[in-house]
Amino acid sequence: MNRIIDAALKRAEGGWLPFDRFMALALYSPGLGYYANTLAKFGHMPTSGSDFVTAPELSPLFGQSLAVAVEDALTHTGTKEVWEFGAGSGALAQQLLGALGDRIERYTIVDLSGTLRERQQQALASWGDKVQWLGELPETMQGVIVGNEVLDAMPVKLLARIQGQWFERGVVRGPDGTLRYADQETGLRPPVEVEGAHDYVTEIHPQAEAFVATLADRLERGAAFLIDYGFPEAEYYHPQRHMGTVMCHQGHKSDGNPLVDVGLKDITAHVNFTGVALAGQEAGLAVLGYCNQARFLINCGLVPRLESANVQQRAMAARLIHEHEMGELFKVLGFCAGVEPWDSVGFREGDRTHTL
Image (cartoon, rainbow, N blue to C red; front, top):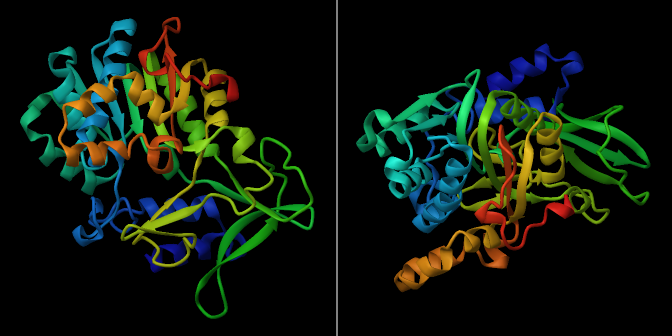
């Protein structure tokens, strides 16, 4: 991995690599980037060699509940295909396929990682030709798109306000041979003015917003549900959030230094859901709704499913909705295309679209 980073630094003007380019190399370099190598990544405990757990691994009730919103969207859009981006271990695909059955004719996974694709193919082998894989977006799509923890893994630009002046933060190789941050003057700014005169570090998300705009361009008829951790713009760029949101995950522990163990740990940033919603709207999508994960899953019938689960299953599934776990930090943003917005089941109570 060091060779790849050093080659990019050598090509970069002044040996300075913008953070979004560094993040892309660290995560997606073929064979060596975090999402392109053979590390376990997903699992319940560090003893499994994994680094973090996502909602589908926590409980099958996540996918079974999400399936209610997906089926509702398939009905209202008159489509029969589900598209999943960044399918991870394949757990969510298994849950949605099991819940939806013949309601869908095809389940298409779009994933850049060859190693994860192999794992998904093993997990989903029993579904045969009903499941297919693509390495890039097709020119046109119809159906319901699902993306769980996809946006947070998209490279971000780092901005730093120091003594009132804005800089873009990048990566260089220091005199001692270690990677370190270095700042360059920039005309880039956060989408809203950050109050106060104190030093401030934050992110902007051109790649995530471009991804949603591309979805809008390709989705002729259908809907999309994007699930991730993050905030609306007013909270994201709050004056008190002055350290930014870039975070790393390794061995089920979190740290804030992406410049060490490059390629061996996940690098993420929280999502600015206002920016994502605006990017979708400007590209022609309509917003179906926006709420926290707890309310979305409860709207989709999680509670009755909990009542029929055993104690251990309840404990795991409860983490999906507890405020101090995933219930509040994680949000769900829904879009539709080619049809008029409808009263989507996942957003019927607790919709926060007005906060975007």
